[in-house]
Structure formats: structure tokens, C-alpha cells
Length: 339
Length: 213
Image 1 (cartoon, chains in turn cyan, purple):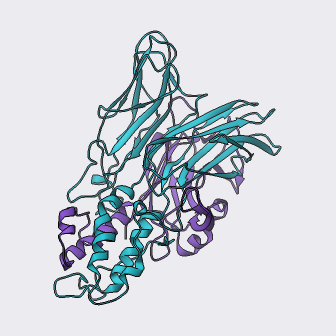
Image 2 (cartoon, helix red, strand yellow; image 1 turned 180 degrees about the vertical axis):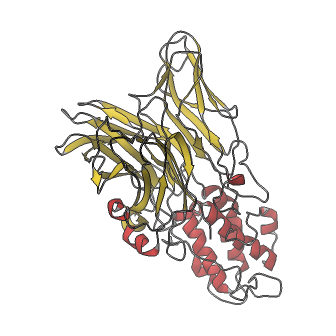
Image 3 (cartoon, one colour; image 1 turned 135 degrees about the vertical axis):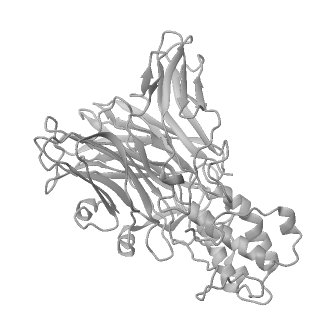
């Protein structure tokens, strides 16, 4: 079951406007072949687990920082591509060392005017949708100053073929034009897999921002302060008739946080009221799950896809709630876990 | 308008599927519509960031360091690489763009451009002004999001230029196989009309695929 490179068009209407599936019209075998191929495109194409973002972390002379992200992989994800753009103001060609899953590589460093794109591939240990962490360590070479982590993105690499049932592929050879159309194949491979396909064809990463563990947000005050200078937006999938917002819990969020001692705690509050509570026990970097919330989904009848032309903007207020120490946040992750 | 007839997904109960001894036309329409709708909504978030509070933004500033550029255009930020979904007409999925910008030009207004391009081709694309380039002139204004009014996309020629083979695996452990994807980047540039007076800053970028047939 090969995966097409390009979205496959399945016609629901003929050129004269008649619906090919309307009562009294035959459903052509070709329509089902296209449907099978589109299903394979949906199941097998890659997805963006970590959208490109700008950590703007600065590293000097052998200093290192680890950028950690939380994701729920699509089952079909077998290989991840980690993309980086590192820059330096130094004139001489520079290098940095990047470590992913314990494997270290030396990579080139560009400049802001001439960025150098780096991609490193890592295979997963198994196919699964179990939520997991993706991490990249960046270390400046000895003597290299002002290394800037300009951008990081992580995406799942497209598959060429779908092999196992949970891959959700459909064998197009089962839909060659014939009369009658093979209902058993349609029911088993297409209709019977649509709910699972709906969960699989996710956006995955909605917003992921890591500053690295060397330059996190820190707070030593009970007065809330926003994490971001301007709010970010969240737009979910519009799936069902009349839906204007995501169901509660379909978008999960987490923070990678810690406190400086066992008597200090903190709180992150997302616009709208959902929270992440950083407990006194989190004295090392810990992923903490936020409470459920919902946000706007796409309005697919409008020119820009926003509900009423306005994106759903959020910020995160950050404060210390107990103790006299410091609360730190290295990453916030918002992911679509499917419905 | 969405590409499915109904514009939304229709749930099937497994009992209804298992009990079928033939697939009627209504079921067919919903099955095909669901696939089209899921493909519309499979649009991915390609770029998204907002500036952390208290961090210096990518900027040009007469008091700061000019980062170098081409013909008076300064490159503020370039994303790492990403893929784009390709439509059946061989153009890319359209993308909506928001960018957070500020300037305090006292004499003139800096011009910002965002360029969606095949990787390492932004500098050339900057001047072509196609459907992959957004422009915004910003007179004296504090940091705020600006919605670009139209969707950016790569045409078929640019999609072809951005297409690369990538080694993938189809099982774990698995043998290497070839797949194809696009290698794209989004860059943001600014032209300070009067470099001694303008300060121009970038405080965030959002680039999201949105299927608008």
C-alpha cells in the first residue's frame, strides 16, 4: 500500500455538477480507488510534531542547553527529522555539537544573513501513539561565542508504504472497477477504519516553545507575569457539524518546570483559566500536565479559517505560589491528541 | 469552501458497518466526504512562536548591529526546514500568516516582507513578489500581531523546486526506502527606509496550512 506524495482528488461531483454518490447513480470503481489512495495519503504523510519556533537561546564556549518537547506521535511515525538553524555573529566558520537520543553530531553554524539548515534523523524504537518526549542538546564549540539557537522544528518523516493494520492503509487493488463493487473491502478497509483515521490525521503539534534548560523563564514572585510578550493563537481541527471549538481535553498542554527547593511551588495559568501546578516536589525538571480546556477550531467556510475572523489568542501567566525560592519553566507544549 | 460536500465529518457506528450487506449511496457519499474533510483538516502548523517576555527580539536598530542582507533588506529571522502538503493540482496547501511587528521609525516606515520559499531560496524570492511573499509597511507602532490578508502558497514550479527525496523506513527496524517531501523555509526581512531613524522588531510568526479550495 504505497503512500502518494500528493493529495489525491476524489470527485464527489461530476463535471456537470451531479453527485457521483447520489441515489440512482452508480458509484464508479475509480472513485473507490481514489478513496483508497487518499486514505493512504492521510495515513502515511508526515506531520509536524514541533512547529518551527525561535528559542533565541544564547550559548558561549562549550556551554550546552537541552530543548525538550512533549508529543503524541502518530502511530505511523517510524522516523523523526530534527531540524535546526544555529547562528553566530563570528566571521570564521563555526561548528556546534548536537546530541539526540545519545548520538552526537558536529553541525555547521551559519549567520543570520546566511542561515545553515541542519537535519538529523532518528528512528523510533517502536510504532505507537504513546505520548513521549523529544529532546535535542546543543553545545557550543570551544571558543565559539554568541551561538544562537535560531530555530528548531521536528517532524515525522513520510512513509513510503503502509504495512500493518494499525497503519490504516487501504489496498487500492481491492477497488479495481468491477460490478458489483466489493462491499466487503469497502466496509473493512475504508468505512471500518474511518474513526481511527480521524484520530490519526491530527495536527499533532499546535504550539511548542522551549527556551532550553539553560535559559528558562524564572519567577520568584507571587505576582503573575506573562511568559510571552505577545499572545500565541490556537486553532484546532473542525470535525463535526456546527463545531466551533475543540472538545475539552483534545488539546493537551504540559509544562517542563522545576522549583529551586522543596518548599517552593508555582502556578501557570492559561488565558481562560486552565492551569499547570508546579509542586514543591518538582526539584528537577518535570513534565506537568495542565488541566483540560477547549479553544476555537477552524471555521472552514471563511477566507482565513478563523471563527468570526479572529484567532483564539492565549498567554500564560506565571507566578510563585509558596516558598522563597525560584520557579523555572523551560518548555510549554500544546498537542492535538485526536478525537 | 471545504472540499467535502457536507463540510464536516460524519460518524459511523461500527454496528451499521458490520451489518451492511451492501454499501448504499448515502453511506458512500459520507465515506468519501469524510476522507475529503479529514484531508482538508490534516493541515499542519508549520511555524509558530511568540517572543518570550523580557527577551530581545530579532531587530534592526541604528544603535545595534546590522545583520547583513541584500540590497538594503535585512534578514530578521529564518525558520528551520519544514514540509508542506501538496494539493492535487500540484500547488502547496495555502498557509495563513500572522506576524508580530513593531517599529518606531520617526522619519519613515520600515517595510517588512515574509517569504515562504524552497529552502535556501528566500533571498531570491524576496524580490519576485509572488503568492509566496507577504509585505507590510509599519509606521510607528508598538509590538502587535498583523494578520496578512491573503493566504501564501507555493505554486507548482516552486513545489517542484522544493521537492526532495528523503530516506524513510516503513517498519521498525526497517530497511531504508525513498519518500518525497518538500524542504521549505519561512524568512522575515525588513527594509529600513531610513536606517538612522528606524527600529524594526519581529516578535513572533505563525504560519499554518489552511485548505481553502
